[in-house]
Figure 1: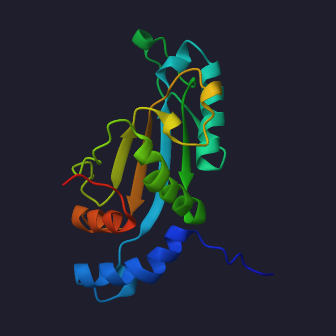
Figure 2: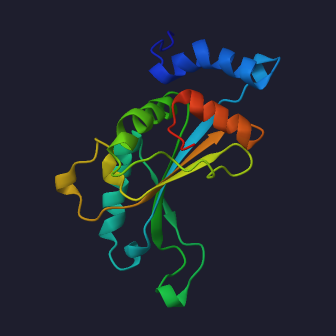
Figure 3: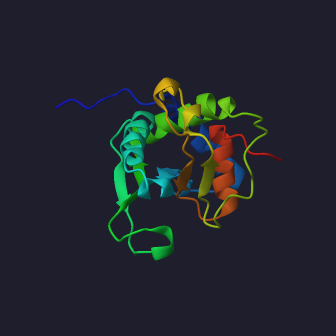
Length: 185
């Protein structure tokens, strides 16, 4: 059985160039200790789905186009009377990307989607969680070219969590800067 040899551009760049640069920059001796991308988690929370369940179907379709794989519908864990929310009602969609799809999505995010954000001046450098992971909040999911603007009824916000194997924020910041993530100074 033959293996697929076509690796995403960003993955090849990481293996060939970025690992050596990070090893030197961070003073790491072992290649296995160099921080790398673990997964990318995309999430769309839809509180409006309580009133209009069709929004969930649209979000599943659109997030599926963006991610390249079918998202999971998340359901409410508790009932909240003030929000007219019952336990088990669908309130969001999420998808986790790993390996090749993760690198392809990251490449599209950095080089195609983020430059399409209106009045973009770079990402907040303080959005790290203390363990080297970074979360980006996007107000409009239609910055991705896969989404057909004619079919979008409601613009949806989404969060993109970049999960790394970094030990602290400095390692995570170095890794993401080498990938080309446009962090503000």
